[in-house]
Image (cartoon, rainbow, N blue to C red):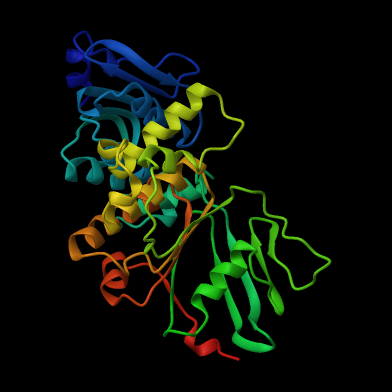
Length: 360
């Protein structure tokens, strides 16, 4: 391996030793386009952000990294890096590089890196599973934790549900199941702070979301929670798709930031192509895309979706599933979805919580 490296160093700059203080260097042909002196996996997350903002194709790049375990290899494979040289590589990383068709050279190989990350990852995990695990460890998630602790609620002295109890970590997702009338939508209203709890507490992050006393007020800042409800509105008035999406924008943004958020959110959800159309002329599936774009503009930490597929055909449902899966891996807000649609449950494969067993 050493002789091969010496032979090609003059042709490929990415094979040369890294300068002092640099832990990751990235080249396009022999042009240095990115470098970082960060620790752990942070340089690779920085590279991901750089590629996204620069619109650069990772397939054209060559990377030199100081050390790579399975985590680093999976991140590079997910970015579609084509060539890598590593000073110290683990056997798990080497297999990952090779399995994903990445050309790999190295100075030294070990069975495993002496790193906690190497211990918690399983080679059988998908790239997306590894990615979300690493994002959470790096605290690079948009989502806030949701804690529902022994919560009961109802109307007019009648308990609709009782002792609801679950915890979703920041960037996690949960499907709330239950038959009609068991209180699923009421639970969402409690999380939103629109309906009081009669017992227990709900925290979004470290803020109280719902209260049981008229003397208390919810503590969750406006814009923290995004709500996507069943869409069966029949009104007709002139409002464009872009205007609806822009309703999610905070008021204190600069014009450039507003324009950027609008563009990214609408492209992200596939509704940019009908930005100027009247919102009320759209199909149910198109309206759901617009609703999700509005929530992305909002940069909400918690998304609540109430029966989002009720009025959707199969094609629109499949499109929604694709968007939700992508959100769960990329932006990683905390996603809470209420549904009795078994096909949606099966398609997403998210953790589930049953409200039926918690009636009062």
